[in-house]
Length: 186
Image (cartoon, rainbow, N blue to C red; front, side, top):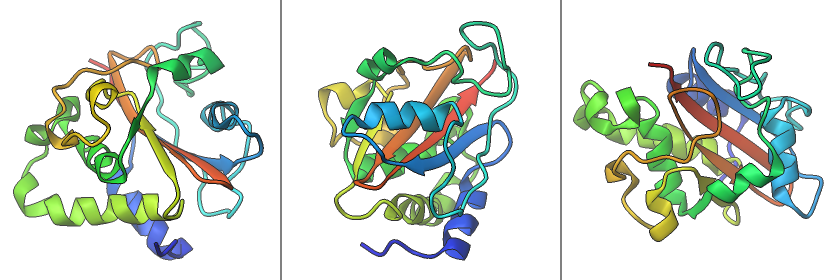
């Protein structure tokens, strides 16, 4: 899989991630990817390719009531027990659903006309992690079937933050970890 280039990747990031969303990438340094993912979520690492300044979601209430600029401030290693493997196709679909109200495609105006373009942007973002990458999500439907159609995932999530609902994808390669997350505050 083509890992792309900085300009293309940033263009796709801009198309899918904006205000109130979280996107960050960091180096994979340990055998246990969850420790690296935790570092990325808590902004304790930088993008090894220097392609991204982390986008953080303001607002919401963190679990410990501090640092409202980072919704993952209270996440622990054990919280990753609530993420489930998901196929690359499913991860792309989840990243698209983050565009919609309550993370549903029926909440994306003009979804039918935009589906191919949005999915292409998600593919570019996840393509950075290579063909051997693993993907994880807090969408409950992936628990039962990592190959399920995530455009029709039923709307159940295992929360990671103090927001009403949060949803996202963890991308894990042998060298990098990416966190792509959306939040509903009311």
